[in-house]
Length: 116
Image (tube, rainbow, N blue to C red; front, side):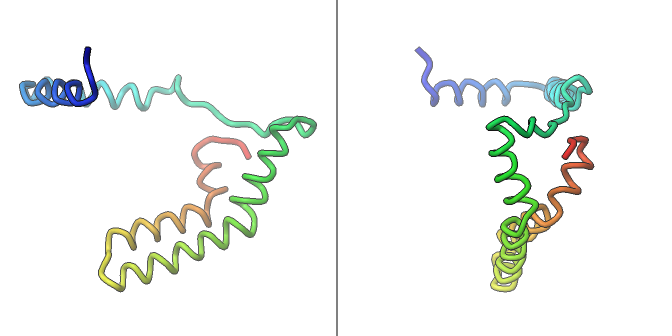
């Protein structure tokens, strides 16, 4: 019976024995599978009479795109600035990126092809 440790060791030893060409072919195959157009989909707003619309309204319209999302984005920007200044550059940059994503969430979602 395989447990997680032996499975991870098996995968690690298999990757170490692969040639550079095999690793390149594996990476190319993964990239093609990741960016296949057949996997693209759009999320449409649920019907206004369903329970899913109530959840969507609270999470997306009032949360991410509303005052809560904007406030969380500004707080992430401020936190990221303080962390970057205090010397934790990686945490600061990650918080800054998260803040920008929260503030511009609707534009990012629309640019990725989802309908809002």
